[in-house]
Length: 230
Image (cartoon, rainbow, N blue to C red; front, side, top):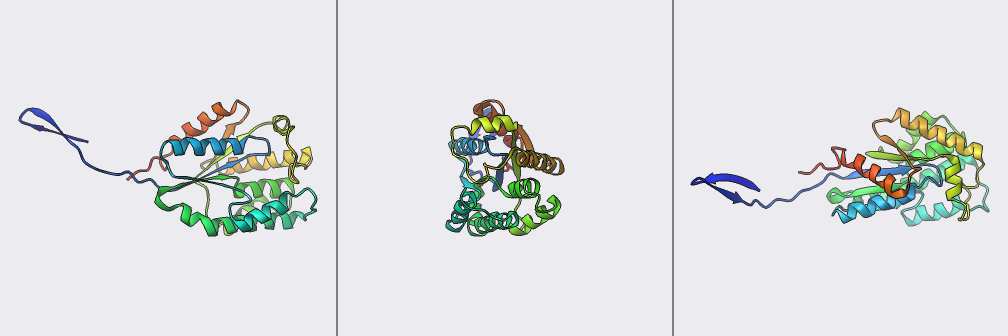
């Protein structure tokens, strides 16, 4: 709304305009039981209530092919070689990015990812120790065709907290890994956060979900790209 003076009176001149937003990709990371999926879903609800167009995707998954790979990867009855495991996660990710991301990013939509390539670096690189983390990072950028999240929220909880939160659910193949595995995953996540401090924001996931969600939202709203309207 513009204001101008006319015969010593203030006249309000209403101008019709629309705000367009830049597309964003936001990912949530963390060990199983960290609450990352809860936070991803809460953020999606908040953004949609504010009028933003938001798409929620999970990894592995998001396409028919990726969902089939997901069922295979999480099946406790299957023994999968560690390197083959990494390639399967990567295949699901490549399918998701190449078949859905371009369409979802139209008109300033926000894509919220429940896991993205940092999971593969932490779980298969750190946890499984299949390859150097830097090599895996470079490989994953090839997998995604250079697509990198604008913001990544690493929901950080202790292994004890994560285990308590999973007591009442049936563990999948990945969740059945031993404690030393998850300790290596945590270390790999922390290394990633240190190396990518401009992108990865560590969030304390120990408080109740609503408090964690507020911290995430405040950080997101502080990013220039989030409110980049034209």
